[in-house]
Length: 249
Image 1 (cartoon, rainbow, N blue to C red):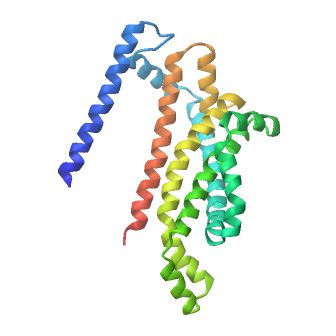
Image 2: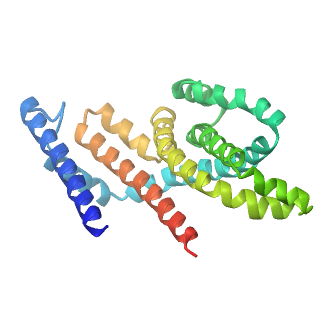
Image 3: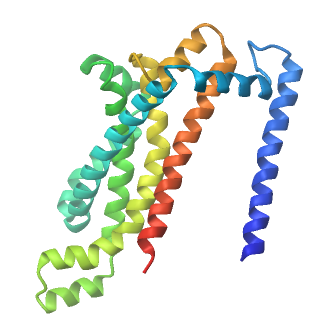
């Protein structure tokens, strides 16, 4: 098992090194910071951004918007997902809504949100609409895949609904919640930053990315992108760790 993990880490490292090498070769080929700066120039830009006085304010606002959207999505997604999984009529009612939200281009949602909300609320609204369908659909699948024999046995012994929900349904849907939350965060952070790029709140990763793009500072755009990727990965990693901790006996 340890050999397999070590082998996987080696291949992961090779993949990262290969991407950096391709990046370096491409930057040498274009030989222009306005098209593709070198990895080392981007690293220096990244350091300068981190040392800037507004850096932590910017990422704090972006993280806060993402967490607000995620929290609303988790609460509504779990509640509505449970109801739609238990009740087929409610599932039939909710399904077209989820499909419509998932199928609508993000840019359309942002343009509408820019009309409806203030600039600080736009990224939160977009994050919610991006993450909610994923979580709700996963929870619904978890309920629908619950062992029917256990449910029937609970009905036979007239076990109250709270115990059925807590002791049968909840353990069944938890893996689906964690999986949905991990996937939703991946989409959600991108949606938050896209919302910031277009709505331009005072502070946010997307705001600074747009400013860098306006002045053609490509290395800053890439540096902010790296920061966004790290934040997204950190939260997904945290969810996976929490899931493993929860599963421990």
